[in-house]
Amino acid sequence: MLRYEAATATSQGARRYQEDAAGLWPGVQPSSSILAVLADGMGGHAGGALASGLVCETFIARFVGSQGGVPDRLLGALGASNAAIASSVEETPKLSGMGSTLIGAAFGPVGLEWVSVGDSPLYLFRRAEIALLNEDHSLAPALDQLVAEGRITADAARNDPRRHMLRSAVTGEELDLVDLSSKALALEDGDYVILASDGIHTLEEVEVARIIAGYANAGPKAVAEALIRAVLEMREPHQDNVTVVAVRPTSATADGDGS
Image 1 (cartoon, helix red, strand yellow):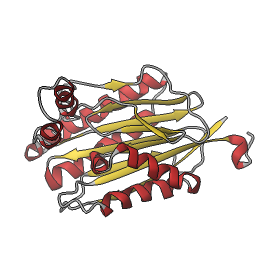
Image 2 (cartoon, one colour):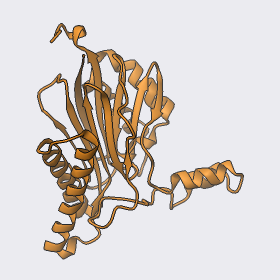
Image 3 (cartoon, one colour):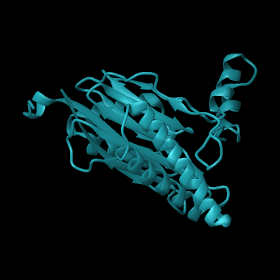
Image 4 (cartoon, one colour):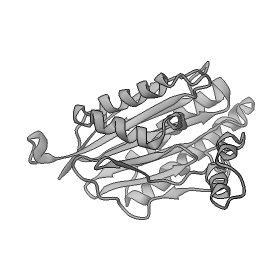
């Protein structure tokens, strides 16, 4: 049986304020089941920080307090988070326009199941390779498709000011796009799952994989902190907030717990 341990790391980057938030449940690990949540807020200092924190807190509370299958609980927690944003804006109209991306990832006996809205990436690292698991709800995929069709250059796509515009976000309005895992993804001893805000895109995916491989044996905390350090070492003058949640599954016998 797999058990899971996780850690978070974050940096404000070059921004004047922090709009990312992340949460883990339960706080004591390793555990046979954990929930990891990451949110990247938008709406300025007050709105973005409030939105991401509210989304994380509401998602965890609703998921943990609900019954039924994991997909239904994930969708229910997403709906509750969206409703919480709507209620907050209704109570304080000056917060209109605030919102957040969201990744909610449930790890249990059958593996990983998730729901996501926005452009925060969810990665699987396995055997030195990395793969994006969730859909990107920004305009980046559409621009990259234009590159593949030969209609624009790669540089034009990379530097397009619309690249990071979101097609879907948790704003209290109807959710235009939601990515729900179709079935549980079985995980293996030695895998890492990474939830991140889009500030991680300062690093190429191959570099993310290299860093995870280099620190994998040291555990999730070391991996998360190494990824943040690598982003900051790039010295991007407009570096966005960056937050990482690293989750490692291990076999029960590996840590001496056969229960």
